[in-house]
Amino acid sequence: MSQDVIKLLTEACLETLYMVGVSSVIASLAGIPLGVLLTITGRGHIKENLWLNQSVGSIVNAFRSTPFIILMVAIIPITRLLVGTSIGTTAAIVPLTITAIPFIARIIESSLKEVDGGVIEAAQSMGATPLEIIGKVLLPEAMPSIVLGLTLTVVNLIGHSAMAGALGGGGLGDLAIRYGYQRFRLDIMIATVVVLIIQVQLVQSIGDKLSARLNKNKL
Amino acid sequence: MIQLSSVVKTYESKAGTIEALRGIDLNVSAGEIYGIIGHSGAGKSTLIRCINMLERPTGGTVLVDGEDMGAMTEAELRKARQKISMIFQHFNLLTSRTVYDNVAFPLEIQGKSPEEIRTIVLPLLDLVGLGDRQDYYPSQLSGGQKQRVGIARALASQPKVLLCDEATSALDPQTTKSILALLRDINSRFNLTIVLITHEMQVIKEICDKVAVIEDGRIVEQGPVLEVFTKPQAKTTQDFISTIINRSLPPEWSETPPSPTPIAGADLLLRLSFIGQAADEPIIAGLIRRFNVDISILYGNIDHIKDTPYGTLLVSLTGDDNNIQEALRHLQERDLGIEVIGYVARRH
Image (cartoon, rainbow over the protein chains, first blue to last red):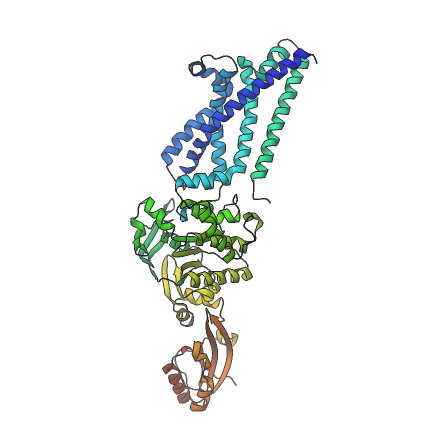
């Protein structure tokens, strides 16, 4: 493989990492609190509020049922407003983040719902505040499952970022479309796919290891 | 220490209104071990949760140490709960925390410093016999050890009251005995008031001072354990007692039930209960000598209720009808638990 191709691949790879990295962090910052909110306002939970729960739930569902490629086009005005342009890697971060937030919210919700109600009851019986129950019971107890869920999110975002690349977002997807597909460079196409597979494998195995280390249930 | 008056709890469900508690009156004095026994679904879980307001009663009042739990704000209630600890059937330990950190948990909530927490947690772990397990995770412990962690955690906030929610129901008999011994020990060591719910009569017999029998959301019988054991009134109570004390009649009597009224020339079947000192008196020998009756012992058993020896004897009196009646009167005048089972035709 020529020097040029390696340079192209490295650049594209870094762009993908940038898009996925930044959108994962921002989406987690918004998605985790949203997931906590969905959990504790649910039926029979520590701050039951079904009206709020269903309202937030339906907004989350609306975003989740919109296909990424449509969402990306639909929010172009918002993207322009936020980053000044709708083309390029930084611009791609906006739709990636917006699509990941409701996904993370649901993942967090399902992880937190697995926490044994008895443990929450025990904390309540000791006089813990709702914030203490969230911070000292729900999140730590669900952490192994949360880590697996976030790993899944990152893997999904790697896939979505390739799609964003097709619409001028940069990264590995952009490389595969422009060189591999439009210029019939099969070698670049294959190399791109291999790099994507390695990325996903790496993310998944790091996530699995971290989750296993945090899990004190199977010692 | 704890006063419940006409506590009612109803749930609304699709199937209609469910009355879990239908007017509970209960008084628990300081330093007492009070047992509440009932079958599953009788309402005992709801009852114990009404004491610390994990379940809010629909009606009635709950006083703990003179304070009305139902009238408190959320913040006041959290403060009050720090003095009412609870242990659970399934232990409910935090799986992500070590033994040490589990016991430290209630102290963290109270905002104690790490140094202060250390001086409280370490002696408690020694007290419950887990001094060498502080860095273990709950998944590495046996059921009995987990409950010991639960007890240490409950004691960490120096509570006035300990609520035990079926604390031994998930444990084997041997471990149950050791956990009950630990509860008795902390009861006398800290003069801690303990309220426990259970479906096992063994637990009541082993450690309780008083007992309440709950059925269908109502207390059907309550009183000192010795009294309830020797003179059970309600059917449920008798059923519970028969699970640990043989109260059944020999098979030949259970087929043709004894007559409750005297029959000429019949034997009298009696069940005698001896409590404490009375167990030492030569009652049977005295009866034979004074009233010229023959006594055969059909069944006998001596047991302990908490620390008091307690014996039951199933006997049949044979002899002249008048002598039998005099012997019965003599027995009834004495401070003995006597239950007339009935008169049965003499067998020869």
